[in-house]
Length: 418
Image 1 (cartoon, rainbow, N blue to C red):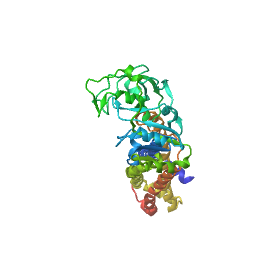
Image 2 (spheres, helix red, strand yellow; image 1 turned 45 degrees about the vertical axis):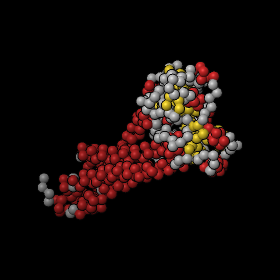
Image 3 (cartoon, rainbow, N blue to C red; image 1 turned 120 degrees about the vertical axis):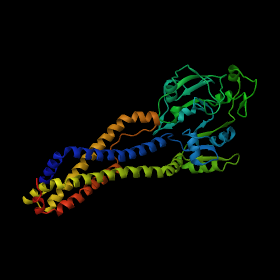
Image 4 (cartoon, helix red, strand yellow; image 1 turned 60 degrees about the horizontal axis):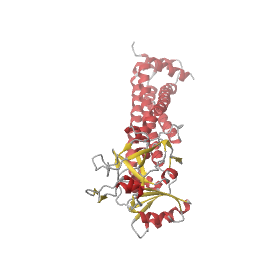
């Protein structure tokens, strides 16, 4: 207790330097724990983009590529899946539900997705949450469109507004301006790629391409919307499908049958396995970022040691007086290690509190801008181990100054002139 009291009094006399040192430690703690929180939050958000799906089916390609363009809307498909092949596979008795997806068109750089009402019934995200409508209803008419929340917010659309779909991606593509869509519903925010998508029926995708061949409009041919509503429009192909099976025990067998489907080359991937493959690719970047954060912590520990060392000459009389009053060399060394420990504990406490305050303030913005939900949870086991390592590092930073003080003799301290 006496050593602790002496340490506190000594730190109070050097409060400006002490505050700067605590600030450096706090910032390093925030950076190290913040990187871990963002990393785990990003993984959980990506994993929660589609929940409850057993398989994703598409044209033959790599599993990660199939997952990226079908679920995360990143990249494009190498090929389509014929409607007949899709029906052959989803009509099997193992299948509980299926969501077909047709990609390719866009609206002001937002993807347009052709699907069926099953999308709104069976699609799950973030632990089994269902899609809900902020306003409006699913598409009923052939030219109804359901908007994701971000599409509606950024473009200022509301129920009943008319929009025009572009052929392909990009705002410079040919427009299906002769067949405008009416906004029938706007989905509630999900924090997933659903927010950045426009949803129409598969029949609508076929309808707007009736007068098109090989990616170009047939000159002089325009089919009125009323006539299209009376036509039997059956999809010819889709981009991918999300499948839910009746039993998880059937996943491997069903995946094998799809991969060996003879009518056309198909791929069936497990979303979790494809995500693990993706995390394997970015693991190097994550390790590098964690390494940089760890080096910042090491730098702050070196600064702590340098700060205590730089004050030793000024404190030689203080140390000599302690020795003359009966304090042994170990007590003096313990005083300096105690100071380093107190500074480290203060830096850890302030840095952790500041990190959670920043996370609480930034969580809505990060979710809105990047679709990453950073969970505000108590420190995990990994966090506790990191904080313990920082505490040990702070104590170790006090050993060199403590050794120097240990070697100071009583006579050397008394000879210092004031």
